[in-house]
Image (cartoon, rainbow, N blue to C red; front, top):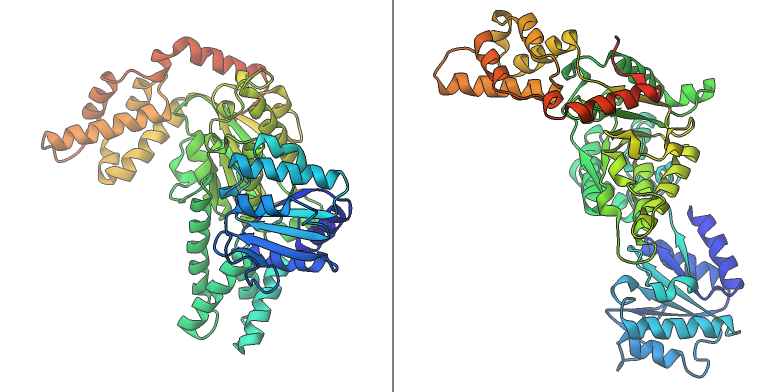
Length: 499
């Protein structure tokens, strides 16, 4: 929700006597401006941990001898002290878990329900709502800045400081690169860039990417993954590669594609046997698209407070959309939504799944989702319907041609000069039922063995010895892998390989 929408909605909530409004945002400066704009003559008082109770506009202390939030709330809850006032509590996540603070906030909320003309506004970058207050709190989230806002901020900064305006192309690049950062962070980076060069340069994009990396890592939910892998390092999967190459053309020419009537690609679900390149494919996809790769750790979404898990999901998706265009990688999707529809902790998983499903159905941001899964029998059928993912591919064990290519890729990466002397066809025949990960392990082991034995090169015989010492996944988990493979075909998923 953008600033004007937030102001409009907040004003309606205040006029309708909603007792407690929770503004979930890092943009404290903007929040102050919004609250000031919607006050319309109401007196605003603020409590913060450093000064206690202060005048919202001047930040001057109102009570010099009392800083404790519990005491302040206790005082304000008596004798209509809050009548006609708005109370703003900053960084409330540190204090809202205190049972006395919860109790008094609940008491004040009931007073407002019963006719007291007052509003409590909680401000925090972390959403934390105890069960006792769940029914009295309305959450208002402030979105990251849009491209138009960012571009205006850059232009205003340049004009105010009298600097040389960058080219339109660089301005557009800076605008997209700044997506996901707060106004405070953008102004800081602009100041740093200008102080170094005297004007904005193409190289300043690196400063932005460094800051963005920090922001993603600090979120604790998303991880920005470095892009070292390409499709040249994946043997086989030609159908999937071709399909993704078409999507890459759309992403790289997004404006032209939209004008032509092309829908923004939603994403792909890649299911398949372990060790057959699903995760490698996610990394190579981002490299092909030329956009950042964000990995969503579903395990980190779960929180102990009511609504905290869903808030973490919203935060992760908002951050991904703010940074977009990007690839959002969700690994082992079946574990994320395990037990949906059952009782107990699965209720949280069910709510998370519902939110994710709705977002996938309705999203119109250039956030391309690459989800991977092993066992589709644990995935809810709603996820397989058209309109969620653009396509579902299954990855099977590599055939003889693909095995030969996988050997070639891993040997070339490590022992390029030895490849011409190795019988790749013989190795391919010897490794039927091996996964890509099995083959990589064989190559690593044979190279290490050759080094330890003091050999000058790696030979076909060295690699065959490693093959004979390796038990493949297809042998270890024969029945399970057969069942999985049959399940993929029965669901009519597209094969990632051309067979």
